[in-house]
Image: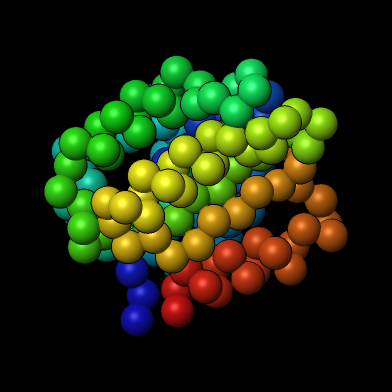
Length: 139
């Protein structure tokens, strides 16, 4: 079964954008949106939502990611299949803490299928993990 998937990401330096594009290339029928371009009222048009974010400071959500988080938290999304991915730096105490925030909320509110954390810019060596993310999401 193929789902109509919205991939919605926020990227500052380009790492999360590159990761979002790589994941989108592995998922059929995925529409890719920058967070500020995604209209939450279109969410019912999708079978699944994948959120991508970088982490700000010591594990916090960046402003645009926090806004989407708050919107999703208020919606009835129990039947929505979801995933979350992000980039971060392991030298911080809370590596990809923004991914953890989304993961915990989506686990409680939706059908969370998979999460993925990548150190800074994804590398060729990360491709098996990206393929596994896509595969787990589709199955």
